[in-house]
Length: 368
Image (cartoon, rainbow, N blue to C red; front, side):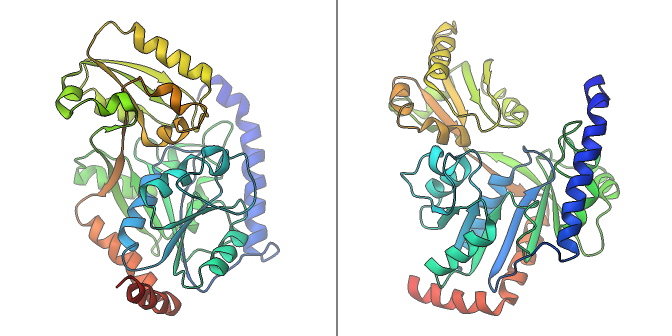
């Protein structure tokens, strides 16, 4: 343990005990937990970020959206607004946050909303959409005021929550033993090929309870998508022929993306910002200068889909149009039989809810 972590350890204990006491107030019924007559599925983690909540939420959307009327409810981290708000395609990250905007732009047909108070947000969604069947709660493992039907906990393969400690000494939002609230634990960002030995080792380390299901997933990177006017002038072969890229990230853990890009680019210059960084005109000047200073004439700028949402700001986006900026979308895939078993688990619980079945029939009838 590093010196700063050692010095911060007492504060971590105090913080962790405070969160534990708060959880106990919910467990003892002193603080209210709201239950709903529709399916509520929570996706979250114990750490401060970087476990892949967004692509796993999108996986659930793809699994459910054709047969159920669904909504995603997020708090809208780092937005400049408060209260309940529906997310529209023309919304900005200032209004709704980057992840909700990404959900809406990727799935314009579904409902996306933000509210820092999840019970109020769900009640408002039910009021606006009486045939709503499922609500996906994004980043809600610590939001005890709502009791989800399915509680999904994500943990990064490179650093399981068991190997971490509570902030500020570590990156956990609460003690690792709080993982007992999860119905499903997914080990994310695993290697594309996961050995049976590695899988067994992790299962022994996590030691899921008898009521918990353990799954393993990995990241799939899509082809780079043009983001600016300049980038749209590039053909697929033009992009592939580039030897250098300037990588712009404002995410928690960009290492896996860098590893992926090394397959295509001889040189990668990385401009790294904090997670959920809101870009300024000064940042754009810095990006432009670093791109122009790269020696190779065959070069592009690569960013993440989440960062692209923050670059869409009206005072920023026009300044980028002459730069060849592409974003790389990601998705998740489960290992071996985990995908079919995970799908079966989710659909079993969703279909067991009588109200969801009723709303589903109305939704499919309306679509047809």
